[in-house]
Image (cartoon, rainbow, N blue to C red; front, side, top):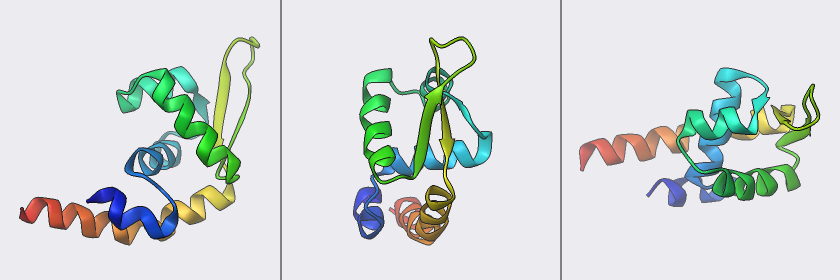
Amino acid sequence: MFDEKLRPFELTINQYSLLTALILGGPTTISDIAERLGIDRTTLTRNLALVSNRRLITVNPGEDGRERVVTLTSKGWAVAEAALPAWKAAQAEASAS
């Protein structure tokens, strides 16, 4: 249901959760995002690639070179903000079920 509501924004619920995690937590490492969202790094990496290709995020080397830091772009912020009413509608629909 969430994916259906978010489809007009070309997002899945996992991708939307990723964007909102970055809105709430700011730039952070891939490991921290995976832990925060409770998903494995393989799934996260796939979703990062999809939103990165759309220029919704940037992924850059961290301070020690082994980690990658994910940052939300202004375009990513705008897409997440535009999709919020659809997410809220799906949430209300799920709560009513």
